Image (tube, rainbow, N blue to C red):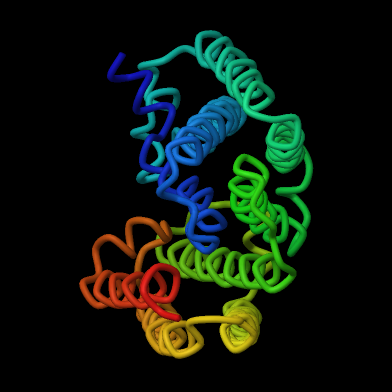
Length: 284
């Protein structure tokens, strides 16, 4: 069971916490029924994500075996057979979709779109330069949208644009780190070889600016708690700058690991969270 759990990559489930974004912004996260719906959406997306990771690891078996880090994954290391992994992936996909449709039809459709997107990425989109980045960013957006559909919270255009631009920023940063690591380790990846550090740096800059602009536009249009929301934009801008500087300095590829490891990012995240929640629950 420990091997199966490792193959499902539970650390990656933290990305599904994006389902909290919409209900938190709407100030309804404390309602018991909302908590139940958000929890169900989180579990559903985690099952679907693990299903995709298992299929990817089966497809990338040969490449992962010679990779300095990925060779430790259960499938690449021979600890979990390909057949067992595919069976587990199918079961996780069925359970994830069943749970999503049980919560609401809207959530089920969003989760089905998420599974379709991730499957398309595994089979086809991952080989197309820049489209592969948009596909991964689309997965982040669908996670955030899932929280709105699960709880029937209205999703504004600023919310969608902010999520999309922030996702592109993180994905570009990941590609930036991968490209630099490839140059050092001589690892081979066809699509990655067609990127350039300079171009990825520009994408990071443009997406960070878009994220800051859309968040600020959202903050200044709030009918209440204007001061709290505007103040929350400050740590967000600092967070984007800090993250970009760490990536350019040679930080790791996984955004969740970098965020949890760097104290400054953690502190800025906490400050932003306090100011944002102040706007939701305290400000007037």
